Image (cartoon, rainbow, N blue to C red):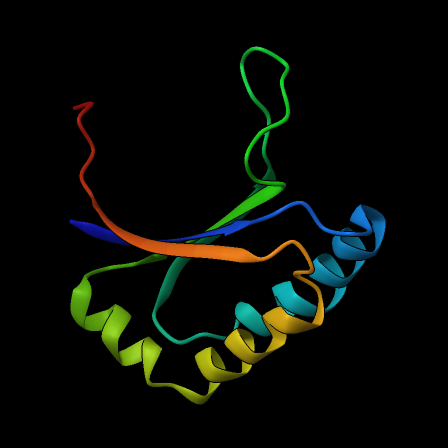
Length: 104
């Protein structure tokens, strides 16, 4: 089973500044976290066109819980975590999830 860390970003004060900082600074920083097997992000949208509860969601994938715990104690994860305050003016919600593919 894969472990996913979902990072849900609230609506920022300045979306253009968020996008620029996230793409130019935060992605390169977070990409250095050891044990990552994948890292995705995208802006949120709803099916009915209403405003979504989050501006964007990033997903950090790890092979298993042990890999996540090792990454959580790394200097790279600490640096990425500290960097969030530099751009996430809309706040952030994070959670983990064990994922298993149901399509075979």
